Structure formats: C-alpha cells, structure tokens
Image (cartoon, rainbow, N blue to C red; front, side, top):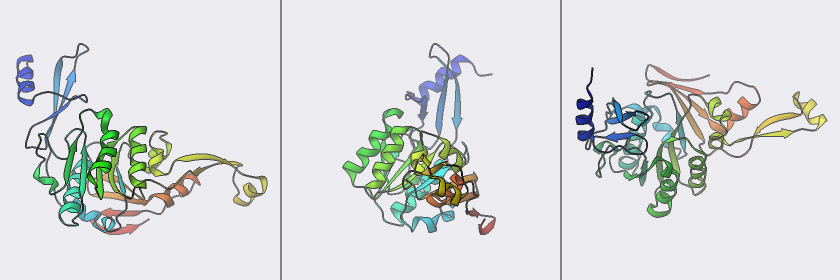
Length: 270
C-alpha cells in the first residue's frame, strides 16, 4: 500500500504534470502519469518505463526508401512510440534527412530541454499543451524546413487537417493514430481524412446495375494523407497497407491485399 506521503514525495521528485497529466524524468524516456481525485489531488501514479530499442526499423526500411508518409496503428503498449523514435534516428543519421519531431508529451525524445540520444540528429519541438499539437506541427514546417515531420498520437480533426496541410507541402510524415485496424480509421469521422475520407455517392440506375451495387455507395473522397498504413498487431507482427488501394477495396466490401511483416517469418502477401 502506497501512502499519501510517498505519493507527495514522488510528485516532488518528478515535478510538474502537464495538461495531459503526464510528466517525465529528465535524461530518460520514462513517463509518469497522474491519477487525480475529483478535487484535483494526485491519488495515484502510473510509471511507464521507456527504452530505446533498435531493430524494429528493419521491418520498414524498404518503405522509408519510397519517401512517402507512413501511418502506424496499434493498441497501447504495442511499441508505436518506440518505432517513431528509431525511425527518427535512422532518417536523420543514416538517410541524412532534416527530421523534426513534434513531441507533445516528451515521449519520443524524453523529458528535459535536451532530447535523449536515442533520436540521433533529429530535432525536437516540445508542445506546451496537448491542444496545441496541430499548431506546432504547422510551425515546424513553416519555420524549420523539415524534410520529415514525426508526430505521435494524431487524435483530433485539427491534427488530421494539419497532417494534410503538411503532406500537401511535400513533407514526409511519420505518425501514429488511435485505432488498431484500417477499418477503424475509415469509420472514424475525425480521422478518416488521414486515409482519404469517405463520402456517399449516388449512382445512376445503369451504373448501379453494371456494378451490381445499390444506388448509394461509399467512395474515397480524396487521395490519402498517408500513402502507407501499418497495423501493428504485435511488436513483431505488422500488416502493411497501400492505403489508397486498401480503402477502396474495403469500401467495396472486398478483402484488401496486404503485406505481412514479421521478424519470425519472411514477407508474405495475403
């Protein structure tokens, strides 16, 4: 049983929590999250140990050569942020790209003004409040001339719009979003723009008969912001979509052709 005194001592050691109730330990990749009472008092802490792990980037190294944006999906704890960190380092140090990380909770680059060495030569922009993430994303492009922008946890309409604005300027995006499958993003009205958006189209009688569909069908509205989408099913088992093709097939009720990447087996298409 943890006492209130121990909680207060831990809180003093960690320092101030941000608007998202998260804090870090300077020089590390650890994250401390606060649980508060209705009156705002800290009544519990969740400590998440962060480590720099190498090797995951090898699963997508070929995709990085395409220089196209990639969106990662996966449940919490599957390793999305760890992959962002390693991709940032590889793109900056090995590919010699100008990489800017928009680090909302200091999870990618760690706490403190000097980012963790795990991100290599990538630059890191901190975000004062989570609600400002979309503004900092645009600021990164307008002020710092990045070739690559990396952003974790895209979750609002404003952030989705910022992603499209960045992609339209020819900047490569590496991001993560809430959801485990591409189908989740298609059905999410806030985030569906990341994969091209969805609209209802009414067909003429002849075209509907030719397609053997109803007159009202769902179609992709625009090119996807992220040409590639990776479902991180497990830490070492990923499913890669060519977003445009997969969205179209799912909207037409078909099973998309995907590439399965696993460290335990060769690349497979299914």
